[in-house]
Image (tube, rainbow, N blue to C red; front, side, top):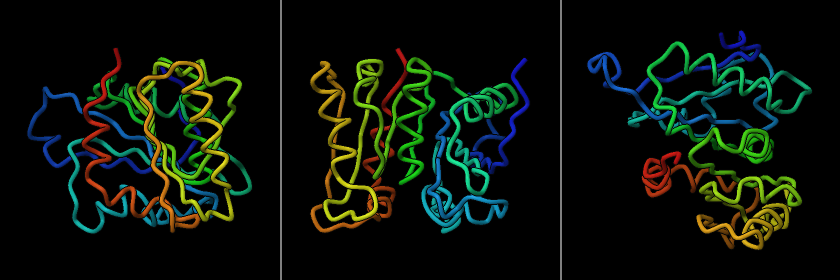
Length: 206
């Protein structure tokens, strides 16, 4: 049995979920930044996929948005317990689990992939960083990372180190987009680009 998740969350089901009771759906886990920590789950709609859904956009996948407690950072064990619980109680296609996150959530995205390298089909870390010495653990994982060249909160070098480490380890499925004029907000342009979600949905765990 999956552990009871300790993180509050919002789960958005796709429009056709109830009409297609035998279909299993991809799931996108979205990890927010430090400013959205706490207990007000409305903050989870401030950025990312849920912001787009509130504006009327529909996606052919579930969106799972947990909320990190105040004054804490993302905990991979807690996140994995939540993913396990959601998968156990919903019709999730576990070959198509994706992770994306911004700033603190970008770090969380890298960390979660490194914690369980074979669980996810692809990740999209935005203005985050990770542990380059461990990059070989996810050399097989499709990655599309994003960063603003003028980011004065999380230096561009944080993403660059991870991408370079992956490529040096032999990774073949790595994309890296740098917005030359963007500061810390590299996520608005990223999530408003349909190509990002089209790319994600093409990825399946082997």
